[in-house]
Image 1 (tube, helix red, strand yellow):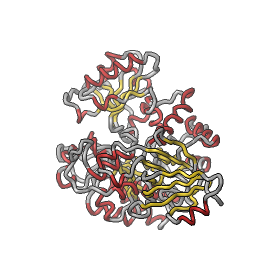
Image 2 (cartoon, rainbow, N blue to C red):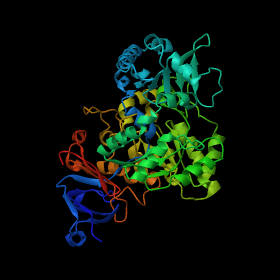
Image 3 (cartoon, rainbow, N blue to C red):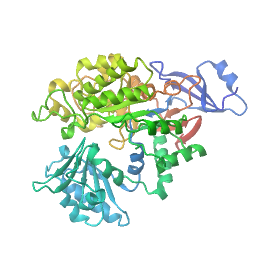
Image 4 (tube, helix red, strand yellow):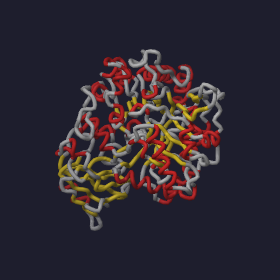
Length: 542
């Protein structure tokens, strides 16, 4: 057997060894045929039609895997239909002005959607209200998603379109009202926000195919060859249109990213629809990886569940979205069905609850081979690290969120709890599997941002974000974005390292990151992305 492509470089990082070394990666079909520096092996694999690409000193690594992304939401938010300029706004008034400009620039849009408002970052703390949006856009629905993705600010038309009822009994979430009982336009957490989130990011069907292709192309430019989706809704047949479009693209050979779906865990043990999806979507490119649920919210609006009250508001401690008994029952039932479970936990109280549920599942089911994980794990207590390891629970983390929270998280949780905020170093020292991700569209999907923040814990200007000693090495960060993420989605036998027999997902940076100062990583680019043995992106400079 001869190789179709051989990539050579003085810097090949296989995510097995600790440092890059000189060598080659040979690809035959959609798999890696050989990796190493033995010239005789390379000669045997070189045929008349073999393409040899000399990458010089460029760094070659396995394809990057984003282990927590809202893929379908990301498609919309990567499109012209989403205004992303609210991240820079410092007041409700500035947000309204930005939305007004966007609305006037797009008079043909059926709805106006934007993301990025965040009250803790505002200089003027004037509280948002639906009347502010009604004043600029009384006829079209306006949907403004909070930067953390856990709240919405709507105008009256959007409230009407979604049928928001302040008297609706919610299991998880809040519909805010004024003193007279009238809805004010602010909705918090998933049970309250799910309908408006779907409306705000509804894909125009006639454009969905091209929007998907455009988004996947952008992922390839960042070296991302596999992602998870944390938001697909399980629907009885017919299958949602976007998912069918992905299936069609796969059949055509045009789907250039692997997609692991994590639909909702739900609150009943009827997994018949989940099984149907798993049977329908089970290829190497499009498959159901497991199920996902929320345990708590976020620290920013005090909905993260803590073990003790918030330092800056002793009257709040957060609460779980559902009673513990539901998580215990659902996790055990899902694991028994062969579904790994991802649980959203930002506060250490939520992680404690999740770890309890995972432990009870193990007692009920034995040591079955499923991959459970805790998503975010922003604050933790020291004894919990050993529980992660013992229960084989992955910590799926987003170092890019460090940039958003900074020292603000310490103000909320206090000095003692803050020493284990985004505790990457302690996680790895306890042999916990750590998977990196972006949580896009909450944060940018550029992996180099998370790698930079994880290694430096500094902002883009080099200023320390916090004084917590939880920095990790470049090698550890790259492994978290490759092998760690592959393990999390139960794909480490196929992805995550450069080894013979694995699927040929390979990335080439334009420089050797190991020879650069960390701040220079922010200017590094991807020169080549190979997915499933096919070159799906190549820079003009390469």
